[in-house]
Structure formats: structure tokens, C-alpha cells
Length: 464
Image (cartoon, rainbow, N blue to C red; front, side):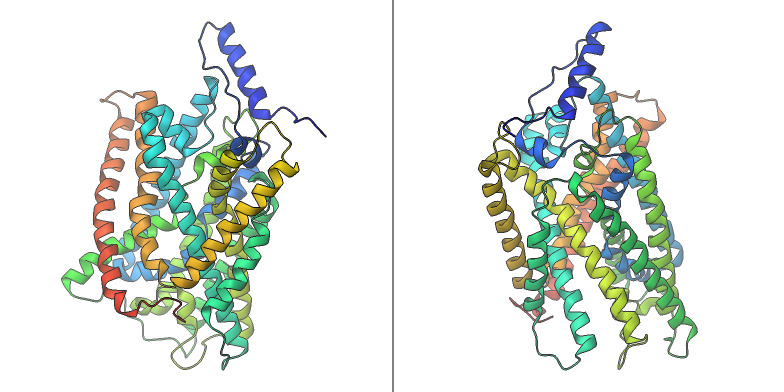
């Protein structure tokens, strides 16, 4: 009880370093793990567990906004962007995995995004850019998920009690209470069963939304469908970039290195299998929801297709079906929230826990309980105060998700492997990084414009 078992990452690093020494290669010596890596990023998972984590970090109820994205792009443009974003992110995440595997072969396994930036680009990049950027994007996602969870609870409440008087902030507080309990899960690896359930829930609520859209589209309640892109030339131009930002955000993760860190060594090939699991779910859910929702509602598709299901005067689907769909959505959001708490947990654990003491010693449990609870309470307060946080997250997404998932993987690969400037992979990576960089600027402008347009409706603790 008084000793800590050797971590699998330390064993792997030592073994790898020995192999390279025998082959005449000087590898980086293994470093002693800090408490964040030792306790939160335990390397005990299989490629299936990795697939569960990846799916929960990417496939979330934000995919219900895809029909709206298609209203801004049309059939052809929307489906091309949806497919292209999927291909680019699958490619990008595999590049990250290859860089991480290469570093492991050298006896230096990188466990966090900021570790990669520090070792590949220099200490300043990890400490002052990637680390803070990832932390605030992930914590922002926790706030946004808490808001979405509260809205889902309120939706369920109003379905069963249309004249109910409870306010949105009360439901956000309830959801925060559930998150408070789930946040005490000790490590990323300990979420594997929750994330398996989350994967099933993704398929469940997507199937419900697809079936509901098809049912409405074939019923006499179907709206008059119009697939033309609405608005002036200026509005359509901004709409295109808004749609691209929405689609890019639905594919975003931002925690790929942390997920790969949960794999038991050796990690070679495991991440690719996990990504295949994840993207099989993505293809199944994203395209079915986007196509069926846009087909049923045309350019009247709203920010989330569930809003269309409510109709102008009364729901277009049976109450029990809407309740079931929202319960699936609500349950899955809770899993997504806990996954995006992991970078925050890791930072707190690294700073305040003692890696030389057992994980469940009083010395480590007390600060863990206090700090994780505090981070959830703060996120819940912000979600209740700022029910318009979705607009702010769109701006964060442009500045954060695109650099982390579309730009940095290309740079990391080119700097690490130094492909020839005459090679195809060098120019593909450069093209993706350059186009994504432009998208950051335009997406940020479009997001700020949307915040300005919506500012007149902003009010603290608004009952939206």
C-alpha cells in the first residue's frame, strides 16, 4: 500500500532506450513522470479503448447543427466540405500519431500537446501558445457542454410540463451537479466504459434524428422545401465561412496526444485502429443527420435540427420520441463534458499532486477532490451566466480548434521528418496548413460579426 507500482510508460521507455543503445543509436533517456501523466494519463488502454475516447471527443450533439451548415452551402458545397473535412482530419490525426510513435522509438514518449510543441518547435511554443490554447479550448468546451446539458434538461421539462416556470440556470445547475460526480473519475483510462456507452448513444440519437427527419419529410406536416441559399451576396459570403467553421468544429478534438497517451506501449498501429473505429461512427452519423435534416427542412433548417422537430405551433413528432431523443443527447453530452475536463484535471494533478505518493493517498485525494469540484462549479456558473456562450465558442473554435487540429499536425510532421520539398507530402501538408491559416482569420471575422448581430439579445442569466 505504501509503494507505487512502476508505470508502463517508464518500463516501455527504458526498454526502448536499451534497444536503441544496442543498435548504436543515442536515444533520449526516459524522464521521471509527473503526477499529471502518472495519474490522469495512465497508459493502460487498448486500441478499442482509444476508439471510444476518440469518438466521444469528436462525435457530440454539435453534429445536429450540420443540416444548418448545409443551408449556408447548398447540397454540393455542403457535402463536399463535409467529406473534405473528414478526410483532412483523419489524415491530420494520423500524422500526429506518426510523430508520437517516432518519438516513442527514440525513447521519448510525448504525452501531451504542449509536450509535442515544446520538443518539436521549442519551449516557448508549448508554454505560451499550445498549452494555454488547448487548456482554454477544452475548458470552454466544458462550459459549452454544461450549457447544452442544461438546455436539453429544460427541453425535456417543457415537453412533459409545457407551462413549467423553471428557468434555464436551474437546469444548468442540475447538469453541473451530475458533472461534479463524474469529474471525480480518477483517470482518462477509467472513462473507457463511459465512453463505450457514449459511442452507443451517438449512434442512438443520430438514428433517432435521421428517422425523425425522414418521417417528417414524408408526412403531411412537411414544410415546403427550398434548397436555395438565402440572403444577400454579403450574407452568403459570410455564411460560407460560418458553415466551414461549423463543419471544422464538429470534426475537432484538440486532445489527440492525450488520448494516444492512454494506450499501453508499444503504441505502434494502435491509434490508426482507434481512428478507424471513430471515423466509422463519424461517417454513419454525420452524413445521415446532415443529409436527412437538410432534405426534410431545406433552407429552413435551424441551428440544431431538434428545434425544427418542435414545429411552429406543436411538435411534428410524438412526445415520447422527442423525449427519448433528448435523453440520449443529454446522456452523451455528460460523457463529452467529462472527457474535455481531462486536460484541466491533468494540469491540476501535475501542479498539486505528489507523484511519489500513491494516487489514492489522502495527500493526493484531498486536493484532487477540491480542485476538480471547483473547476466544475466555475464552469457551471459561467454556463448559467452566459447562455449565449455558443457564439463565443465559435470565435474560440476559429482561433483554437483549427490551429490544433488542422495546422500544427502538418507543421509537426514536416519539422520532425523533414520530407523533401519536392515530395508530395510536403506540399500537401503546406497547402492544408496555409488554407487553414486563412480560414482562422476569416472564421474569426465571421464569428465576431455574428456576436455583434446577436449582442442585442445578450443578458446575464438569460432564460433562453
